[in-house]
Structure formats: structure tokens, C-alpha cells
Image (cartoon, rainbow, N blue to C red; front, side, top):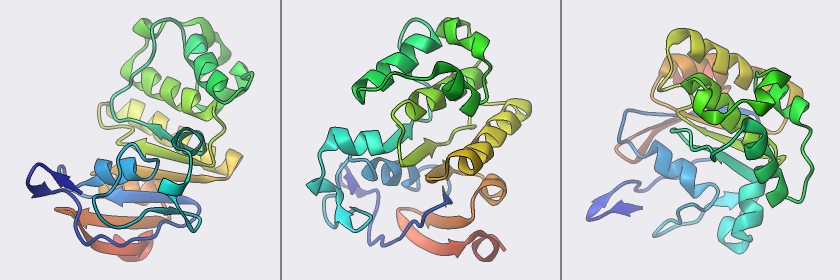
Length: 209
């Protein structure tokens, strides 16, 4: 992958197992680009990306993005209520959403369904984005710096939501973070990159020792 004449990712060969994984590295190291490759919001200039052994370019992009849901770093909600956003996402997959369940999974109570998105705090917006992504019933949830804009209290709340999701839903979660301490709290598998290259990958206890 290149940005102009500069490589963003180069010579990167990694694996991401089932469970909760974290992609860790400093700002500008290519973490978000790597996340976008996993559901084909970007394609590599060279090399391949595989999902359970199948190259992602062989899969229908829209179907892939329903199976591998992405929550971007900056919340991007539709105008209207949280319920409007969740119903929109569910409709893309031909589903009728269980609003209460999805809100609960994202750490919000049922009263938030009719809350206008303009009245939400940043932390609430982030959890609304998670609820919207879950409306597609993805097998893999990608979270790009999910707490970077939050204060400590909101960060802890979103982290609890992420931990609960893995226990309640199974599936896999991949988190991009610049914070090794957050990666240690949430993930069992770590991929460390810097300047677009792999530094180390493996169990969290070994990589973050």
C-alpha cells in the first residue's frame, strides 16, 4: 500500500486469529489502513488479504462488509435518532432489528432509541456506532481507535462494552489502538507495527512484556 510516493504498508505478513486482537502502533504507522484492507474499503497494491482462507477480492464487497463490520475512528451517524441509524443498517442486511438488544449490547439503555444523534456525547456516539454495526450481525467487528476522543470515564465505559461483546456474542473483534495499555486490557493477540512494517505479533503477554 502506498500514499502518493510513500509506502504505508510494506512487506507485511500477519495473521489475526479468532477472538479479540489489537493492532498497535504509533500514529501514522498504517494501523487504520490495515483495518480498511480487512473489509475492502481499500485494496493492497500487491499481495493478498484472506478471510478464513478465501481472498477477500473474490467476495462480494457488500456481503463482505456485512460480515466484517467497521466502526471508524470518528463517529459518522445519519441525521435523526439512534433507532433510525440502527434500522438503516439492519435494512442493508434485510433484517428487522431488535433495538433493545442492540442498544444493550452497545452499553446503552432502551431510552436511547429515540435520542437524536445531535444530543449525544462523543462516547454515546461511539456506542451508537457500535450498535449500528451490530445490526448487520457481523462475524468480525473492526474498531478503529474506539476511545481516542474520549475522557477516561467514557473510555472505561466503551472498553467494558467491548469486553462484554466478546463474552456475549463470540465472533471476533479487531481493535486499532496507539495505546499498548489498552491493547493489554482488551486483547489476547497483538500485532505491533511501525512505519508500515511488522514489529512483532503473538499472544499479548509475550508481545507486550
